[in-house]
Amino acid sequence: MGNGAAHLLLLLVLCYGVTMAVGLYREEKEDWRGDRDETHIDREEEWLLLQDSKPVVKTDAGEMRVLRNYGGRIIDRPMHIGFITMEPRTLFVPQYIDSSLILFIRTGEAKVGLIYKDELAERRLKIGDIYRIPAGSAFYLMNAEEGQRLNIICSIDPSESLGLSFFQSFYIGGGTYPTSILAGFELETLSTAFNVTADEVTEIMTRQHEGPIVFVGDSRAPRPSLWTKFLQLKEQDRLQHLKRMVKFQQQPSQGEEQRTWSWRKLLISIFGQENKKKGEKVGKSPDSYNIYDRRPDFRNNYGWSIALDESDYQPLKYSGIGVYLVNLTAGSMLAPHVNPTATEYGIVLRGSGRIQIVFPNGTQAMDAIVKEGDAFWVPRYFPFCQIAARSGPFEFFGFTTSARENRPQFLVGANSILQTLRSPVLAAAFGVSEDRINRVIKAQREAVILPSASAAPPDEEEGVAKFERVQKVIKSFGNEVIMGFD
Image 1 (cartoon, rainbow, N blue to C red):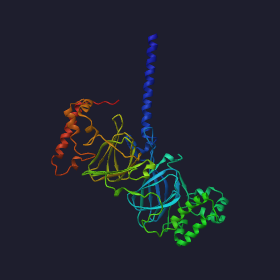
Image 2: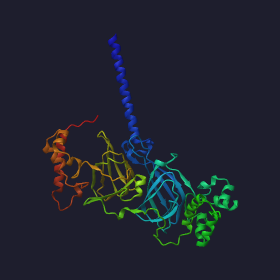
Image 3: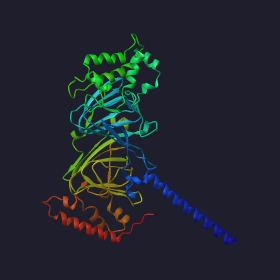
Image 4: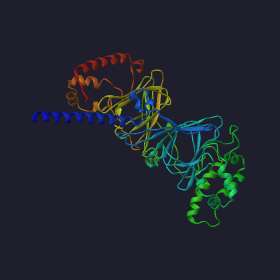
């Protein structure tokens, strides 16, 4: 009887252990995949594609969409990816947000105004430019070009956010839509603060209803907006009108002067300095950095790659975010590698390709075909590779969660860690002879970006034959090795 009770107790303990193990596995898998709606996932392994796009701003003049990473226990630092589209002659009205942004100009040209150390900084940004907007800093964006749409990709760092949404905008300019943060104050308070009549305050605070992105000086505007009317005034009239809005007291205190001066400069920057020459720099803010002007860090016949860190562009230091750009020729591969310092987020700029990502236990996390506009992320430490389609080049841009110099560890290729490790160690680890392991790991003479059989140079006739020999070696090698992952 005693033995039966003991066996029953042992059985119950085993059942409890199995139940807990299964539950922990499911919980871990859900953390890896994030808290996402299953309808947004085509296949179970595509949880590393960022597909849940949410519009946060949408008007006739433009829109902003955000791809949110819901994170999980394996995410060292969450990041969202934003896409801003602005029609010609449009303005993203002055605001500040609770997250820092790193802008990348995909197409078009932008004018950005930013309050930096209590000074107005203005920059004209062109294709390939990267520019940082700190959390809490007032800024605006303008597409002042005729007939050219502006497309911006940006990282959104929520580490300083209030946690209310993807990020929280505080609109300085606005009316009934969007509502200006000034609207929360009593009319008498604003009238006194601006030193104007209550009617003048009411007119300014109720006219705008076209949304956060508006047309300026464009026939497509439903009716002349407050911003358009400002632009239609002569420069001197614009300045005088704005001075009435933000007029100082005759002898303001030092603190009052500093606060008012910042807002006055932001407003005048939009409406009072349009006559400045194109490309002229104003203010002390750090310059932008053009990633296309930089020489690749690595280049061979099969592609090139660029990585920017804080030593290249100092503003990245304050966000703790890096930037990269990779271009693969048709059929080539960015060799299987690991990023030991950061999570990576990528956006396909051109072409199509394949992304393979591996779980720590050696099983496949994702094998997906991606095309222009698709976004993906790779958790820190997870092995992965990108392969270009044979139909053409494959270019992708992205952000990493570390601004320090990135030293990826390549698993295959002439510079791989397998080449660096000693043969006897590897032979013992794989359970094969040293000769066989050496034949496999040293068969590839290229590094970082590797050719496929179809991408081999035409004058190297032995390329295809070598590829076939490697396949045979791998096949026979695999027959001798049994690798299990629990």
